[in-house]
Image (cartoon, rainbow, N blue to C red; front, top):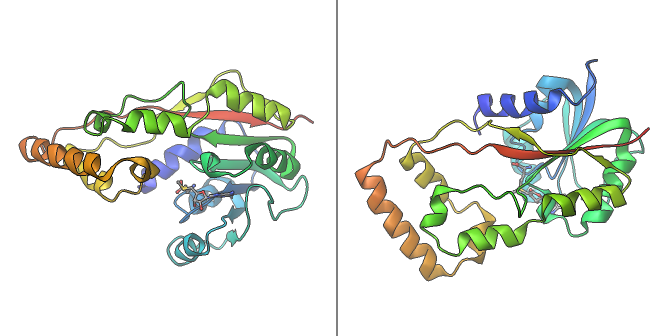
Length: 236
Ligand SMILES: C[S@@+](CC[C@H](N)C(=O)[O-])C[C@H]1O[C@@H](n2cnc3c(N)ncnc32)[C@H](O)[C@@H]1O
């Protein structure tokens, strides 16, 4: 993720948080810290990156260190922070990994200050984008949709956890346009969990077809799909 993309994401959530600075933020499932230092830059910090994987935290501590960011071992189901201690919580593509999503949202409610906001950046099964590469991997669309809950299911879970969901999602176009070759190179890393669920033969055939098209039109600019964020507020 480029610095501009990080800035566009943090700017998108800024409107739902208090204007005062500094604010305390939690990046829940912070991974390698792609966004965590950006939160400290935008909101002042401290920012806590909570992440269960030692390996991911090590990478974040090496590559995404920041004086106002602390990475902590822990999980969404047991957040290692006190009650009512943060102004905002970002769950960036981590929610679908949580073992117990209701417990996680109850924990999010616990650590949020009254009127604090949580940001659920996820795919939603009923709002799946029409990604170009689904054409190359015929099962991918279905695999992706099965990984995610619908928007209404997420809202119901949030309400059950004592959080107030916004009516609709906020749509953010933070990604910069990429060429077909750049998109191919990113896909080839197989960082997306989708590929873990596809048959190897389908993956090989898909990449072979994609390679042919990349050779023909490497610089074709691919569409950017706006991404949905569901805003959840802790009532006072
Ligand atoms: C797709 S990555 C996203 C990481 C980061 N938010 C980003 O966008 O770069 C999902 C992350 O969720 C983490 N995760 C998995 N289970 C979790 C849990 N129960 N609580 C918190 N994080 C979890 C994974 O270890 C992984 O780092």
